Length: 333
Image 1 (cartoon, rainbow, N blue to C red):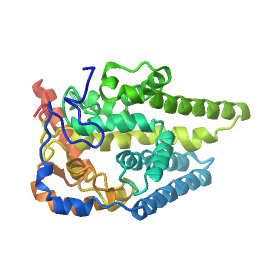
Image 2: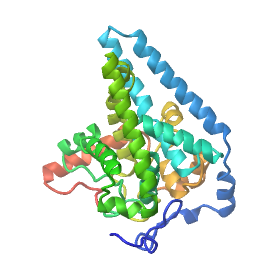
Image 3: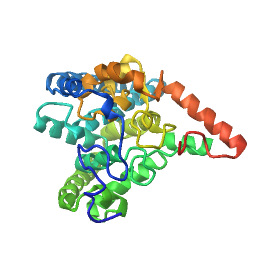
Image 4: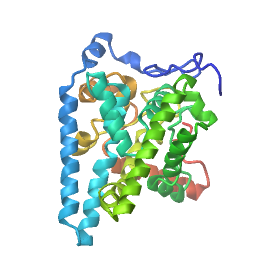
């Protein structure tokens, strides 16, 4: 669908659309929402310092375990998980809620996006479409279809479709050949900005590769690329849990899952496990989502006590449907 999106697309910061009128936010009182929306730099700077400290510890663990594969590989995997969880501050910065200062949101957002091979501005518009058309089969660019088989499930976890999409985004952004789907959420007015950012990123990646090859250095490979790749299945599993198996409807109380994760994951994932709360009020900063959860939890229809439990339920439905030869329950609910 090309052309004027104004009739159907609420845009960045918008709630729903004419073709997908989202419901659920009305359960939050305006006074409560006004209180929770207050933004400040301090919580974000503290959380960022924690995340950077975790990255530093991961680098140290890899360095100290060098030459001992049975120690270094687990260290790289753990460090890779911390890297991929940088998706959380990227996500918060795209909403402008990680920090009160706009320039800090942009600086941190661009930095962590580049480190994880994502263009910040492109992501910002794509993610806005995800919020506008949450769980819409045709218009949500981030919808994760329910796995049709065990092979499909593990393919999604391993990122067999994610990595080609990521590389394709960088290629198309560099050449300016955006797809029809991308033109739905990217206004033509930002094409040049998006292309410039992606081209700068690609040039930076090429420069790092060239320097590494010239000096025969494996630093970028060991302390960045391999851990980034190794950690991605963990993020795929988390992202799958956010909506997969929930209703494919405009009801935000039912189409998004909140997962009651452990405190360490909530810390490094910037409270994003409170995902239904975030979709109900994306203007609420990450540090206030716990308070919002206390406010709306009685109304939420899709809450799980842990990510392992979510995936046990998904796998149970996949195996059940495989035996019956049917579409897995939860898809198109």
